[in-house]
Image (tube, rainbow, N blue to C red; front, side):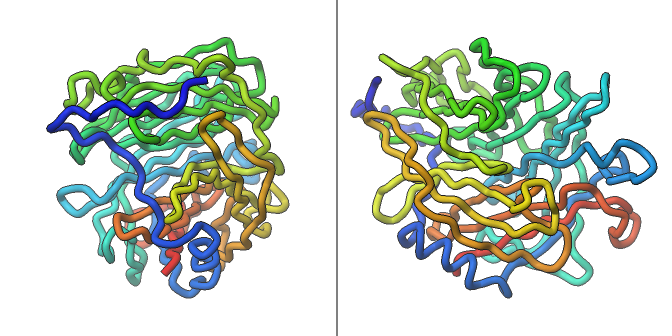
Length: 354
């Protein structure tokens, strides 16, 4: 397969890449676990149709993926939620929310009552079970980016949605590779040197497919909204790889630590579908040339605040420019407990490493 390209970056274009953590990954995760008291909460202003209604089949439906943007130029942060609807003929959804409450750097701060992030869009899609999602910022730190969504039950593909502050999610492109039934249900993407690596995988098969795109090919115009989905090519000579993330992880995400080593984090609850289960971050080492995801190196137990937040529904992370690791999750269903006129909401907890 190809290795990370060493091609000089054209001047005047800043290609997006996640920040490295300030410390090694084990220290960062131990910090998250040890700073339980510093976890903060806010609400997403969801809808009653996302609740666990004991008199219907809503309980089989659930939130599945959570993602967030960087802190935008107006001080807000946008959050995205994928929600499954499993009855025949139902449509899953992608929704976006604008958090404009207080922050410390890019970490949300808790208020009393909890800040409610209003829903800005609830997009029904032709997929019952949109699963893992990940947000990739656009070039030059603009208030825009792309939401990558795996379609597990119906589409058996990856869809990419274009987004900008104050605008709706719009389907931007798709990757269809003849993925078999029962997936894909995981996605990860980041820039390594001058290459963007995109992994589309499934715990149902135990395999994934790896794609690569040169930064200047993926963003050929170096302008907002111009990402070229067709720039992704299956790596050579072998794009299929064993995918060892098992045990019911809700999401998995790439992270780079202070040593320069890459890892894949799996966010898992035990039992896998129990909102009150025990939550773990599983750690897998990633190498790029050749590409390999290791067996699980270890797990770190994370404690969220009292309530139904946990990795049985969603699990994701964000690394601030300072290198502080933030780990987040949400409710599995909307609950009728929002303050004021908000009604049905889903709480998000965000836990910092220091």
